[in-house]
Image (cartoon, rainbow, N blue to C red; front, side, top):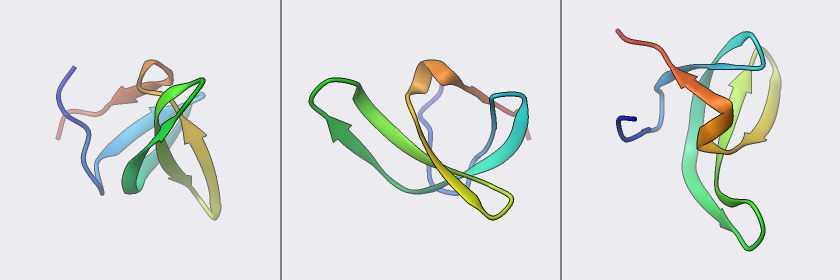
Length: 54
């Protein structure tokens, strides 16, 4: 998978969203990305995300 950057379009749980901010490290889940879907924000691991080719 390509490196995920701020502003990249992604698919999270069958919804299109964008990466928001920097990746964070979690002791138990590893790297977490904040995904903005509409007006909501979610924490997601790279395995939960699908990147969209632009």
